[in-house]
Length: 143
Picture 1 (cartoon, rainbow, N blue to C red):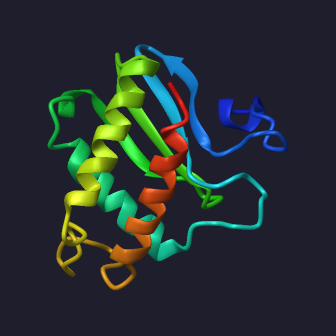
Picture 2: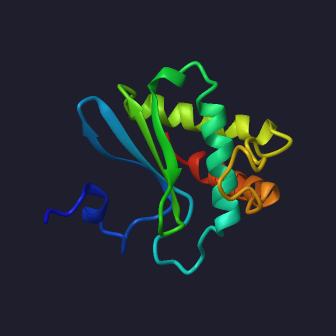
Picture 3: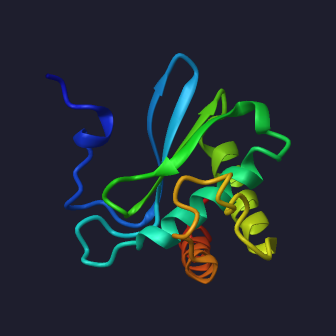
């Protein structure tokens, strides 16, 4: 079996950041790395779950909503995947920063009612806000 693109990345040298990890049929896959892989500090499930709801809601209500294919967590709890149709790196980075700023304007996590979410009791608004602030500081160093 072939390794998928994300398994070909050397996680021993990867740092927090924003990476283009693949493109297929016009769909660009971005790695939003909130934590250093195998660094011992990981996002907790409630925080990740809340970031997923917040970012996905902001992104799917943005001017690029028709380009958003997917946003979701990595199983290793170090970040998220963002798949965008036809959006190359610089525009995707600007879009990510704009969405994160939009997340900071939210006063609660969207979609946390029992009818809306399969694990509605496991959310952390404050954890999400802290992690988003931390990640924005990482992105400020990128062009």
